[in-house]
Amino acid sequence: MLLSVENLHVRYGRIEALHGVSLSVDQGEIVTLIGSNGAGKSTTLHSIMRLPPPEGPTVISGDIRFNGKSLLSTPPHLVVSSLHMALVPEGRHIFGNLTVMENLSLATYARKDDKAASRDLDRVFDLFPRLAERRKQRSESLSGGEQQMLAVGRALMSGCEVLLLDEPSMGLAPLLMYDMFRALKKLNQDGMTILLIEQNARLALDFAHRGYVLDTGEIVAGGSSSELRSDSSVREAYLGGV
Ligand code: ATP
Image 1 (cartoon, rainbow, N blue to C red):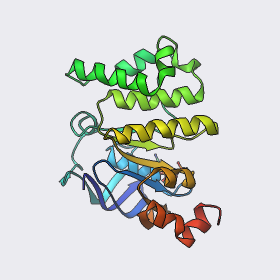
Image 2 (cartoon, rainbow, N blue to C red):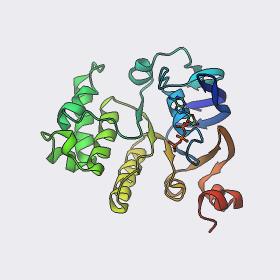
Image 3 (tube, helix red, strand yellow):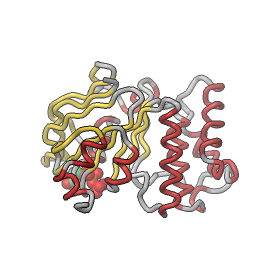
Image 4 (cartoon, rainbow, N blue to C red):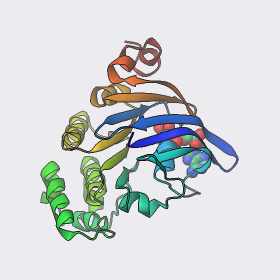
């Protein structure tokens, strides 16, 4: 497995948020983590990205392995620049007072290969032509959908091979949501490994190869997307019972 989370327990202060989460993502897969509000989905991604407290959780026990090697002592910048993982955070967190191009360029600061960065810029503009048209526009004046494209584009500019996405459909009108997922599918077809958090379980299971269900800090189900779609408890709790 490329990425594996093994019996992970984490806490914020004294409160334990994950109680023994295990999941894995293989190279080239799209895996989704679904679950209701507060289940611990973002906490799982933040643990993988080694986000430090106070925003990030503290690992109590368990392990996170990348290509078999524990990354618990890896600082966040190396998770991005050496392991080539990138997070598209919930709420986008783009720099509103910078232009589209400046946001994209910032993400390349740790890269040494200018040619590869320039190829990634072509790829971002190819995937999201809207960003190319608006490259000189201040990011705060972009629409919500365009800001989400920019958040994904910025992650790609880090040269990532594994993309962790925290609710990319949040606040998007249905058409834009489908556009975003089409773009993500294309990225995967070109080799990108994807771990996706979604509250929209139906959308997530249509998109992913496999999935896990997280409930109050524990994995309660896992399997292929079609297995999860036909699981009666998953249907009842997350797919509106149909
Ligand atoms: P949502 O879909 O609402 O974003 P989630 O499944 O991503 O939810 P998390 O954000 O991971 O859930 O939260 C899991 C638990 O950890 C919740 O009880 C939350 O209140 C708590 N929590 C999350 N971040 C912090 C933090 N920085 N400090 C303290 N507690 C936190």
